[in-house]
Amino acid sequence: MKRSRAQRSRACTQCRERRVKCDETPDACQQCRRLGLACSGPIQGSVIIDMTEKVTKPRARRKREYSQGALHIRDVSKAEIGVAETHRAYSTPPGIFILPNQSLPLSFEPHLEGDAITAIRCHYKLPMLYQPSNAAVFDHAFTSHFVALNKGIRTYNAGIPWITRLPEAHAEATNSALRLSIRATSMAFYAKLHKDVSVLIDSYRWYTKSLNNQRALLSKLGKDSMPNDEEVLAPLVLGLYEVYAGTTPTSVFQHLTAAMRILEMRGPHNCTTGVPFSLFRALRVSDAHMSIIFNRPSLFSSPKWMTTPFQVERKNAHQQLIDVLLAIPDCLGLCKLRCSLAGFFSQDIAATTDLTAIRQRATELLDQLNEWVERHPHLCAVQPSFHVTLENMTTPIDGSGSTTPHLRSLMLPDTFVALTAAVYKATRLILTLLLYKISPGSSYDLYRSSSSPTSSLLTRAKQEARDILEISEYVDSTHPIGFDFMRSVFPLVVVVIIGPTKDEQFDARRLLERWRVVRSIGGLCSAWVHV
Image (cartoon, rainbow, N blue to C red; front, top):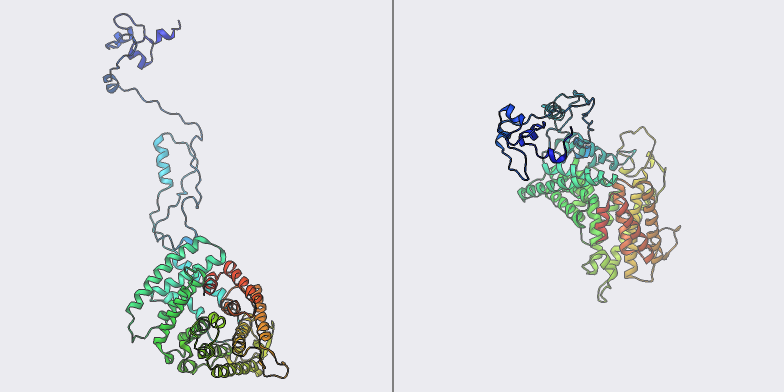
């Protein structure tokens, strides 16, 4: 007979715990008497339960029953178990990686709960073998990528550029500042080119370490010390990092100035061959650009630096053009105006200033530039697929140092022609506007040629500015990567600062701003924009 809810609630405590039927009596139920237990009697309201019996005789735990395939261990991919990505090789120190144990089945039926826990722990057990670091592999990959896209392709031998030695310099460097600077710069270039923010953030750490090591080395460098190749190369590479990353607007110029001062300690006689000569040529071009924009005489404009380093290897066409650029700040200094290039052309010259000397010097520089044009007419404008025969070559840049003398013709790369033509136009623009400033309204035969009629200086200056803009557009559309493209920023900056009209200045600034945002040289463009 089914008992009511009220009757079930009157069962004694022991029967309720054992879940058996309780036939209670006023004294004790039969179940308690049969087991020899002290019956607590029926529950009347709230009853305090004696915990002694529960502790001494606990209830047996029920066993869980598992059905077929009830427990499955999910397959874990490499990304979920923390396998580092390729560009994380620098940020993750050499250590032990967590790898799954693929020897265990992914689906099984354990008989006990402890078996499942053991299986899971074995599945994620750390390997016993040490996992070596792959940092050297990725160092080589980043550096090779950086060199391949920046060295350019040339069909002649104009001397081995210093950038091609970076993989070897990184592998053999005894200077930790140089090794870390190459790593940081190659990573920053890769990050900017491929829009990879994580690699760029990781490059900051290596750049900071390299900068701290470089400062420590400079503090130990004595006044009469002879810096080696690594000590000269390290600040130059750090300057390249600022070209791509651009931590501060003036950091590029600070690193280039530091490299120039260290090279000055070597002296011109120790910069005639090998890597020092290659570094000297690169720094000479960069310092010429800075000396023009800031209107200050360059260290390399002194007579000993103009001649001594070129005793073994003659100047090429580009270096001959740099000679004219290096002489312009001294020419502008004859007006007694101590200011930048922009300030010189925006200020008025004092009425008491004698302009005879500056007019004569500017005319001499224009004549020197005209002589350069006569020797290198093929470098004055962009002419794709232009060939130069070996019989007509007049300078080493045209192939006199070629390793393939059996070839009767060589093709100059468009990037070098465009760069040289833009620098030539910028040099002529500065000198033309200088003559216009000291002799407004006058005419001057800038080309000393009967085929080019005399015209006003301002008209000539406008044409030079337009030519620079056209060359810059050409470089932007064909060769937006590499050192030649990087050096093409300087002629564009000249138009931004001293363009004859507001239209040329606006177009040049717009293109420069586009290079800052889109191209991988935002640090360099930002540095020039804030001058």
